[in-house]
View 1 (cartoon, rainbow, N blue to C red):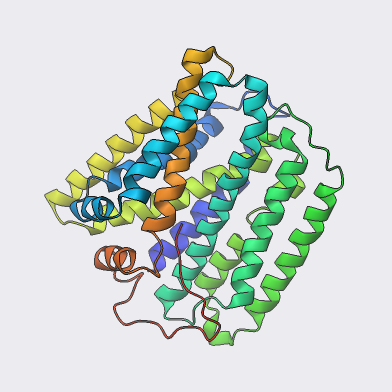
View 2 (view 1 turned 90 degrees about the horizontal axis):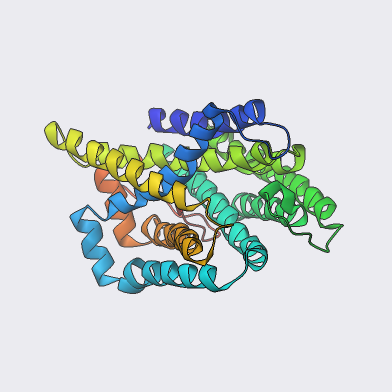
Length: 336
């Protein structure tokens, strides 16, 4: 348990700091080290979701819930490819705004899940309503800041909401303050250092949006941190689902699926300015990333029986067999 907590804390704080230090000015080409971190934190982490379908119990669950786990991913990839083929790059740039809003909401939902899992693994009371809402609002404020300044997303569009960035900044500060106050209202025994570190990092996750003007410092760090969080957890799942030779095989399969799939996704992610034929690959890439959002939103939702059993069987120290008493406000733990 302690190893997961501190590995997750390092996987969150480390990339945020590294991106700020290594980020080039403006949209200049990043140094090789930062480029590799972005490759692993973005494309490799998305591709690693495909490894989950190699597990028999996940395939069984997917076939019994085909809308979310089969038809939605296929439909998103097909729709993305078709849209990219017929729409102009300028139109696609505008459509990328809601796509990025969904992406960064997905990031913050995972942060909520990490904080909830940290509480659950410690046997603490679940996140209370104000703690959870502060995390969500802080993430939404970060999204508002990105939409107000699309240059941080390297999009050549101009949104008409000039005051949105200032409003988003104020909302972010208020949300962080509310979250810290809610945390301090916990009894001292209910806020051990590991849980506190994960919660605070999750709460201030969007801070780079309001501090940096370089896209790589403002957005790249969050992208890498999100991916590294996910890879830590899925790596533990792979290691915890077998022993001996079987463990080595599962980790090798995970590594190959993630790296090969990540290379394909990374190659397609740079084709948005190409002709219609190659843009279909870019659209399929966007669809694959959105499919990742949809699959993860269901497969890691610990309020549901299968995800709880799936994670609890492999990592019982994170999801104890004995249920934690529910919070009086009805909150629950999700990992997305």
